[in-house]
Image (tube, rainbow, N blue to C red):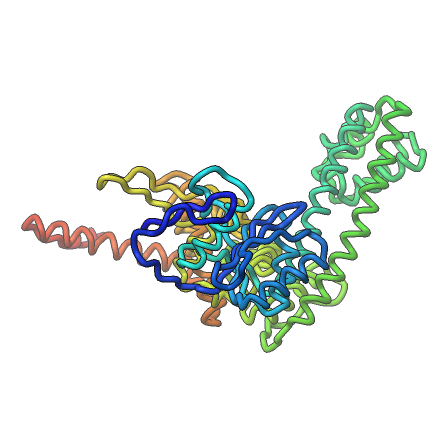
Length: 454
């Protein structure tokens, strides 16, 4: 099918050689920008099929009014930075069906490039059904996702200020990192806050040592005998203040997340008897219970998925995966399936595509934690490592975790670990069956060896 070339004036310069069948005859295309949005509608719906609208809210409402007046029912929107989000939300609220389209699908535009041509080309491809809509979770999930991503940003920023504190300590030759596993643990925080408060005596500072610290008191005293430079102390105090300020914002994010998850809780999932009040695991158990009530299943039963991992997965995709056609579609969206490219009957590439998908990254981190797991998934991961190496095994194990997550969320079934021993028995049975088939093909018969008499 030959598509017509559209020039800058919006006129068709070449007619199609065949009659084109419009899949979406009333579709519009929008080229999103920072300062203006160019909109194109089919020529049979308006005399002037291309218009320009500003980025203000009143302009977006005028854009929606014009589209509705023209009889448009479907809109193709190019995903450009974050500028598409206000346009998407306004059009969706006005009852229009919005398709968010990857810009890579519009890469090969015929002729020279311009905003007018882009929106017309986008409308043309959309009307012929040649575009695919990107997946976007429901509005309720987007609310949780925004808060969860903000919390992730705060954690990253807080970690950077911890590194600045460590740098100031090293510049004063206070070698806390040599005697403490975590500088911001109970002992480390107590010592740093005492230093900022004005304490300089190493013996007094060493009294903050917790009894669980492996380093002796004398070693801590040696590590705290440094050079007290005024400029480094000032930077240390500033970094600690920023750390505490971010901690307060993190507490606000946690409270907001808890409220949002409680609103979406459907209940009906019992995780057993909760730990005693005041224990460390009680907060983790409460979050696990809230996530299970929201999803309808307890995803932490899958080996390798901790509460934080499940929180990341649900905040990104939500508990409803019905938008995905099947489990293969879901794994492909995550970028965990081989992107096989074949030309001339030869496989050019079969590796997975590069992706910044947050759920993919979470699953790959969870797969790495299976290396020492005494479970069926742990045995599966270690067997893959011997066959294909750790990088490929990590991707394959993440793919398996993604399938388990999909089936649990769509079917509502609980995950039951068969155990490492049962998995190894199954692999042995499969190996024996394969040997028998191979021997039969060669005209031989495999028989088990009787155990030697004692």
